[in-house]
Length: 192
Image 1 (tube, one colour):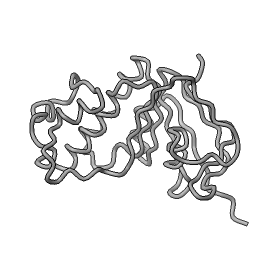
Image 2 (tube, helix red, strand yellow; image 1 turned 135 degrees about the vertical axis):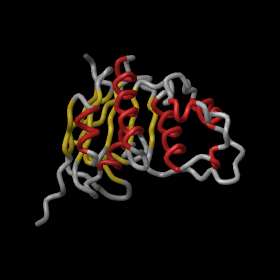
Image 3 (cartoon, rainbow, N blue to C red; image 1 turned 30 degrees about the vertical axis):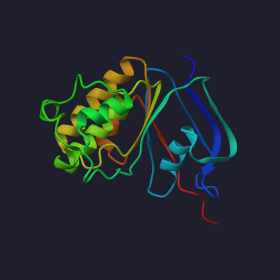
Image 4 (spheres, rainbow, N blue to C red; image 1 turned 90 degrees about the horizontal axis):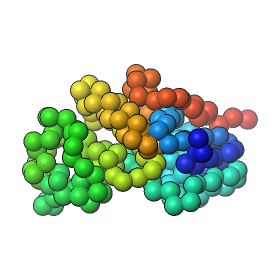
């Protein structure tokens, strides 16, 4: 199957290179885990795939017309905003069908009245269920309890089965093993 994107020996960064050369691709219906120690540029690599970070060398090709949905580790502030979960899903075009029961009944509540974990899961859902060909998730299990993590793994598989390619950065080895079809490890830079 033709990949949604293909990175060959990509070195990515912001003002300067952060990663070692990385080969990475994802096809429709595939979930790829991206692992490695802190500071090797996994989040930066996701940003480069999304077109937000700079590619210093190597090649990064995206399928023409590729629709990308990105979840980052930054949580937008919602305190004082009259924004409900339903409003958040509408902003990304995500559907509520499939939300866990512990959250589905709270969609009309203001986001700033939900727990941090509930807000985090809704933000994940808004990205995961947005109309996109490629979903990029950066440490999605942060702030999730065991039930949320298990539900997320199940939903990732369901989303991939509907045709999306997914790349997940995670330090949660159990989650990666449960959710991903294959894993790419990003190495630490060589120290001379």
